[in-house]
Amino acid sequence: MAILQRLRVKQIRFTARLLGAVEALPGGGRLMQPLANWPITAPVLNAILGYQRVFDDLPQALAAAEPYFGGGHDAPGVGALHLGLSQSPRPSDYAAFYHIQGPVSRWFKIFDLGGNVGNLFYCYKRYLHLPPHLVWQVYDLPKWMEEGRRLAAENGERQLQFTRNWEDASGADLLLVSGSLHFFDPPVYHMVTELREKPAHILINRSPLIDGPTKATVRDDGFFRTARVLHNRGELIAAFETIGYALIDSWQAPELSLRIVGKPEFSAASYSGLYFRLKPQN
Ligand SMILES: C[S@@+](CC[C@H](N)C(=O)[O-])C[C@H]1O[C@@H](n2cnc3c(N)ncnc32)[C@H](O)[C@@H]1O
Image 1 (tube, rainbow, N blue to C red):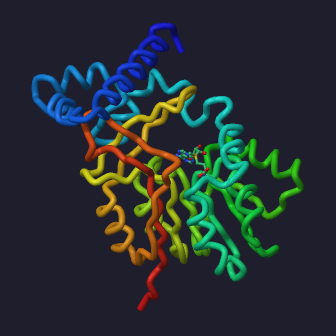
Image 2: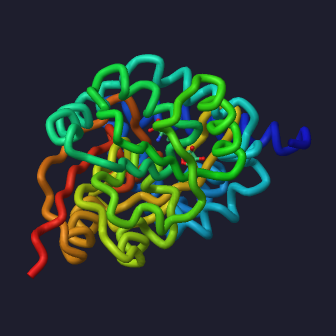
């Protein structure tokens, strides 16, 4: 990244933190929220906050942040970051364990959408009794799949496989969408309808679901930035119900949050998890 872009990233980060701290003060919301919404002040605030604000959709967020991505999902070190983060389970992983541990002995395939180098496989297999016949198949960007294959070979892990063919999710016992739902456009519920056979269960974890209408934003993860969809919670659940799923459970993922200055309806005090089961077909 060029020096001017690096300075702009620092300015956006500093301003967002400062204004966020003001908003968190008693009565701060009553100051920041009108500023973020008044027709005269909103464009000024948006200019100051750069990509760290609300966009109408993912392409707009991607376009605004593109010069500042720092490699985005492909940034060097992202694979190591995810492996490091899943050395031990994060709080929301326990909800996933709860739903997976019973039925997994009867399952044949877990399809891990956005599964990076297989970080969750390595973490989850220490806590769940994965049956030897089960295949854990990861779909991710080519760079991480290549790295994941190399790691799996190094570790002699034959249960862990990688694919770039979405159709391989067809008929999976579980579609695991952990920390990745918000990166897919068209949304995952549309992708699922393209499959010949829908997965029997869908477990979404660590996604920033919001109360306001579905929008998009950019998250700054320190050494890289990524654009993401902010799904409206009710709309997302209804979309999965429309394609044949029943919501079984939902939970908070308190390890992650996303705050947008002056916009509580587009902020997530904690990320969320959802578990769906495919309803019997007539
Ligand atoms: C936050 S990580 C989640 C890693 C892991 N599932 C977990 O919960 O710890 C998001 C993953 O989504 C992947 N991803 C983002 N956009 C993608 C796309 N268009 N196709 C495939 N993978 C994508 C990233 O490469 C990254 O590995």
